[in-house]
Structure formats: structure tokens, C-alpha cells
Image (cartoon, rainbow, N blue to C red; front, side, top):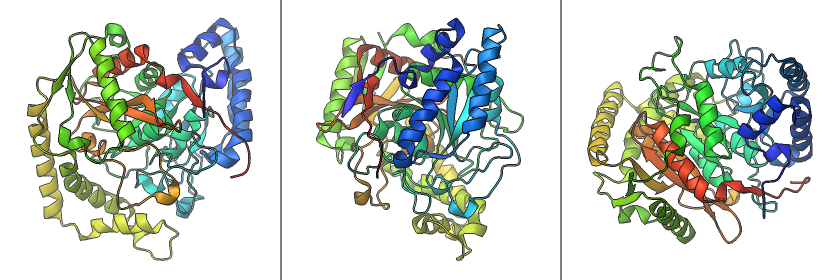
Length: 472
């Protein structure tokens, strides 16, 4: 079911790829060819990409190779490929938002985060599939198709959503890292189900300008990669203020890299309440408990914490905000019965039609009250630790869209927290399990620090799936 990382360039950490490009040990052209070959071999089944920019990406790799060899790289990651979720605008490119209705929709501008990546020499390899309008956590898509979780060659399992294609692309070695967006767990859920590391930054850390919105109040872009280090590097490239997004850069962000190697000695990390263990599978809880033991051995103090409410208590407030804003964004599409939409998405977003302005503003007030209550409960902790999902990836045929997989993730969005998901175990069938490190708003560097210490002491993030090409 799994193999260890080897010298295949498609599974080398981005930090290593970049060093090899600079030293001349590897060529951006050869690495790009390797990724394009894997995509050609495996993506017909995996369905990670909605569009692959083969010719343009290879030309960019040739240009990067010449620039590096001539001593003129434009950044430390010049020549490194990346995959972008198909909500992120690229001028002149098709951006569907995961909707068949928008199959021919061409972007009129380029998202700020994409411009920053390109300015640093990163090469856009293609766009990845997403749940329609990012409105679900399982990773399914009725009309555009669901990406195939690469950890099971025989059974189509949930890849996690809504950044489903981004998760599958990185897990399968079809991209070294990728960008997703997270409104209720949409970076962390694919990280969990696909065995990756994913960061949900605090709102405003990374500009959302040029990204098709689901909920302007709660959306945030985030990086997906195989290691905490690579996630930190990608986060660094994308973060910062932006005149096109008034929320971006309000609180200056520190470079997380100097803090990564400080370890967890003396940190106070919260164990979730016993009541929150209900509903999680035995293997999820066993992996969670082992993770706490690892962090204890590394010098952290694990503290039992009493929370002012259950994680699920945030859901009504969260969904009132999301449905109101999603309906404002997509009302013309969901109200037109002739449009080709996933019916569960149409029904869900349409709920926003019946939410009054008073109810919406009341939800925003309640959101602030919940945030203050949780901040008080976590005031003496450095982080709160939970599983990322209640189960490992399940068969897509078993998905109940009325029961989302986001019980452990959604509260972080509602409460303005940041959170990191990373692999912490596997089921007997080899399916990945995941730990979530939740920190106060704007404490991304601390979440990454805890995650880095965990990955230095474990090898779960080094596992990769063994793929079979071919028929679905």
C-alpha cells in the first residue's frame, strides 16, 4: 500500500529540489518532464487536474534552467512546479470553480498569490479539481468528477474537499506542492485523507484577491505539501499585505522558518475533552493518543483542557455565515433551474436565500462571542491538539452529504484560529490518519514549530502511495 520516499524527483521535498536546481544536480526541465510523465501515466484515473499546462510549463522550465545556469534565478524556487486549485484566477485561463456551468469561463485577472508565486519563479503546472464552488468537505463533484484518493487502487475513496485535486496531485507525486482554500477544513481534510501536511492560516495572512469566493468572511488560501518545512516555505511565498484585499496583512506576519527548529520543550499543548472523542474511530484515537505521547517525550506538557462549548456548537453560526455569503455570490446560478449544478450544492447554497439580514448579523455577533469564550479557555495554552478527521478516507459510495467530515476542522474557521494538519498514523489497510494542531489567530509560526518537531521524531509524512496506472 505504501513505499518510502526515494530519489524519484517527483517525491523529493521542495526544499531539496530547489537546492538541487541551484547546484546543477537536477535540471528544472528534467524534473518538469518527470512530473508531466507521471500525470500522463496516472491522472486519467486519479482525475486530480482539471487542466494541465504542458507546453507552457515545459517552456517555463527551459527558461528557468537557462536563468539558473547563467546565474540569474529570480528566486530560491525558480523552476519548481506547483498546482493551483481551480478557484484561483489566472488571466486568460479557464477557471471553473469546480462547476460545469463555468466550463468556458476565462479569468480576466491573475490572483495575487499566483502573481507572487510566478514572481518568485515558481511554475504553474495546472489547475486542480475542486468541489463545486468549494461547498463540501468530502471531495465529490457530481458533474466534474471526484479525484481518486491514491491510497487505495481498488476502491474510490474520499480525497477530502473542497481542495480535492490539490490533495491528490501532491499525494500521488503529480506536483511537489499545491495551493488550496479553506472555509471549513478544505485544506486540512484532503491533507488528512491523502496523508499530507496542510495549513489553514488566519484570515488575512494570504490575500484572497483573485480567488472565486465562497464566504468572504471565512475563506482563506493555504498550502498543501508532504512536509511542514515545504508548507512553511510555500506559506512564506504567499503571505503578506495586498491593496486588493483589505484584510490581508493587517497583522504583520513573522517568518516561521527561524522558529521551526526550536522544538516543543516547555510548550503547553491541550488535550481535547473526552466528550470530543465520541464518533472518532478507534484507529484515529489510537494515533491521536500516540501523537500526544511523542510530543510529551519531546518535552511538551500535555494539559487537559475544559472548553466552553462543543466543536459542533460552532456549526449553526458557521453555516449561517457561509450560506448567506455563498447565496449572495451565486444566487443567479443556483436560482436558475436550467443551470447544470450538483443538486446538493444548489440545495445547500439556496438555504442562504431564507436567511434574513437580522439573522446574518446575529450570527456574526455570536461568532464574536464564541471567539472570546474560546480565547479565554485557551489563554494559557500554546496549542490545542485534535484529530483532523473522525475517520480515515471512506468509500465514495458511503458518503452522506448531510454529515460532513469537518467536525474537528470547522470550528477553527469560525473562531479565527489557525491550524495545521499532518500525518500521524495509518489504518491496518494503510490509509493515512492525521493530527491537527490548532493555535491562536496569527500564530502560524507556532503551529508549524510544533508540527516540525513532530515530523522530526516520526516518519508518517515520508510514506507515499504505490500507484497503478490505468482503468478506473
